[in-house]
Image (cartoon, rainbow, N blue to C red):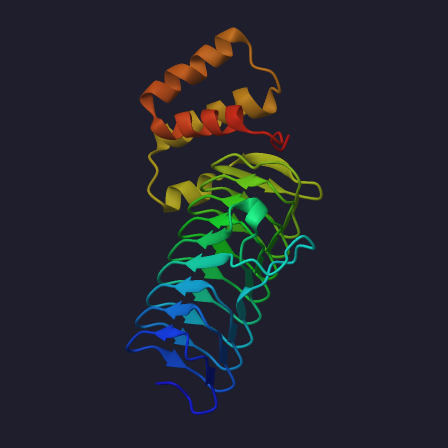
Amino acid sequence: MIHSQAIIDPGASIADGVEIGPFCVIGPEVEIGPGTRVGSHVVIRGPTRIGRDNAIFSFSTIGEAPQDLKYDGEPTRLELGDRNTIREYVTFNRGTTDGGGVTRIGSDNLFMAYTHVAHDCEVGSRTIFANAASLAGHVEVGDWAILGGFTCVHQFCRIGAHSFTGLGTVVTRDIPPFVTVAGNHAKPYGINKNGLKRRGFEPALVKALHRTYMVMIKSRRSSDEARAEVDRLANEYPEVASLRDFIDEGQRGIVR
């Protein structure tokens, strides 16, 4: 299952059933879980832990040192979950000591060709990164988010769960959960209704999220009466509460 022309450091831990193609370089302190398939010409540096049943395609670089001038060789980490699909030329960087030391990526994600996850990012599960979507350092991405092709995200931004970015979007502020954005710089274009319907969200919940979006994002400043309406909806729908709290807790401001 390991090609004779792959280079595997003795300090790497490779589980049973792992496939590693030719011309790969697997460094020390790399752990690869069972069922993971690594294509040809892949470089994996440690400390990196990769879960089970991942598919890593050719020419990807996983767990390389962060692109941060302050980094000085500290033993930071990359942690990758299960059942991720990582297409050609994808790059994931390890963390930095200033950012907590770990870059974390969840499970069941699709990273299309040329996507990039920088140091200290936190990516959830079931996300889709279309071709060349890129995160700068310290970015947080919630579950089910979809980043359109060539989306670029500024450092320290948050991308909320179930959000969606259009082709070529430039993100410099937080994107609240459930919201569709597009443009340079990103502007909101409503709730991600189609995505929510495909995931089984009830019409009443989608309507409540849309109302919250109108009150908290498009109106710029909520009146006491409007905010009371959002709080009432939040008591009925946890998803509304998560949208409200995400906006309230932000440090960079949200897209407008």
